[in-house]
Length: 386
Ligand SMILES: [Fe+2]
Image 1 (spheres, rainbow, N blue to C red):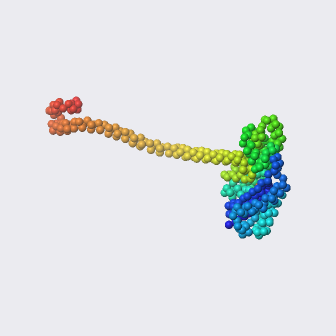
Image 2: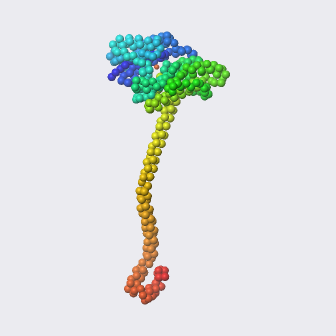
Image 3: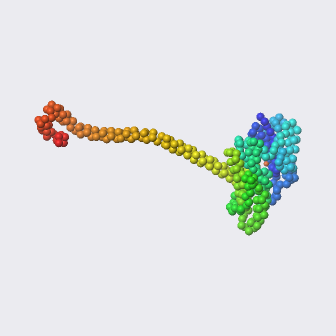
């Protein structure tokens, strides 16, 4: 059983996690919030991390139920980068200290690889296309085959774009500026047209969109043409549509049927819903095409069968028709016989006597007269002798 303690502090959040054989035992975190209208600065963020890190390490060990960390923990991992220098340094120094104190190997982890592998570990996704969207990164990956990048932002990250617009609207930074944009966008309805900048089919450019909405927002809000909610809605819809477009291309190219969204912006429910709708559309398309092709295959087979064996079918029908006619005739005969039996039942005794008399007397005049005389006394036989 391998047990690792990891420290992540590449931006305004600092967290310590303990994981044993793929099971997360604990993961306490603390976040630095800048005042509304401002972003977090490296120096202040690092100071926050320094104040929190010792408490978080102790909390993580307690929550995980570890009695003797020196014996139970096998390695110390930390985010090496990319990220903000000063906050990263805090995690690295604490990781190095614990590694030396407990005589455990130290494992530097690439920030982006950490996000992807964490997602794969938690979800069990085998070979997904990964959409990595956070404050510092916007990329579409295929993690197998050496983390191949299909598309990415050519300037700022999507999280950064949303956060900076939150500053324009003076939205609070707690719990996160992106979360407040998302909540405000829910009541937005009027779409302000922004540049749609998907580049070279796989990359996106977001800085121009931010410049556009930043420069237009004061006038649009002052004239009351658009509300802050409308602008949040417009920004979200535009940038998310671009992300879905490049994700769709990556999935079509790789043939992957799994999509993993990682990074802070991945928490945005609107992005998740749009991605789910897109995936359902793909599945439905596949389902319909599959069914149509299967149906056409069956139909073609049936057509060929009819063409090739038409004469066999015809010959098979002939005996069936004859059999049917025979059955009809037989049934009608039986009906007649029944009728005859019914007539004979009434005259059975007399008929029997008549037949015997005819045989004995011959069919001469004498016999006929005898029969007629006899029948004259029996009204039911008159009908037969006419
Ligand atoms: Fe991150």
